[in-house]
Length: 307
Image 1 (tube, rainbow, N blue to C red):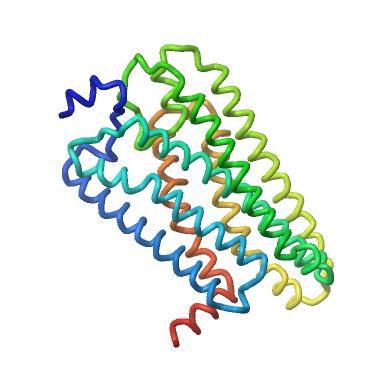
Image 2: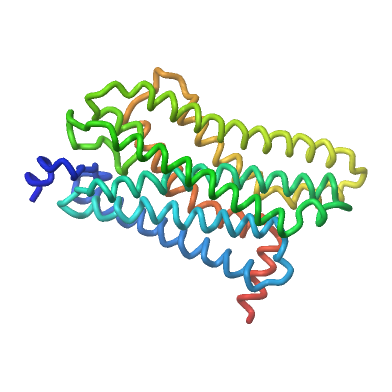
């Protein structure tokens, strides 16, 4: 079976997390637990926001979007990693690989934009409280969310089509746990410089624009909070955005370490390890962070538990 997979032009071979039997079992259990926490935590957050009238605000609408992204992002990657870790057949079809890459790129970009929109929402709530519901009305929020999903999914489709037009004649063994663009460039016998430049430019534009909006929003937020005279007032204002700020720090901290670390520590092994961090770990921590750091979500969870 493996011989057939290796020679087929429509099949790629992925890596397992480990080739050592007892480590395979440990990796499988750890990733399975993280995946279950990701699904249950994000689903619970979506349900709580949906059924609680007090949480029908722009902030929690964006949070529901983030939870859908985390569930989809993790589901596109982690199940295949689990199968490859314990199974002998680590092959993935051309279509399967393209779909995995498509959703990975699209959902990663959408999360970046949604986090920026959530920062803008906090800016409007803290810096423009009297005009908040005028600025962040439901139509405007729905348009922002739809725009984020549409732009990132169309952008992802273009990159996946361009990537799979490359001839992969060096090997069909992918030095990665899932289908991502950079490892595919290493398999092509054609010069991929233009593909790489286009990838970094477009990804850079999305990331820089989103990060800039987030940074400007929080600069204004912090400036406004510092002008509040009472300690209780400052604490209350900051607590409304503490959970989001934690998620943003975790998300951008990972991205910056992946793309801005010194070349001296640049290696395929490091890239693979870091890709697991933002694929499995971050999606698991997001709902935990919001449920533990957000007072309104905690109260809603307590009320739901009592019922």
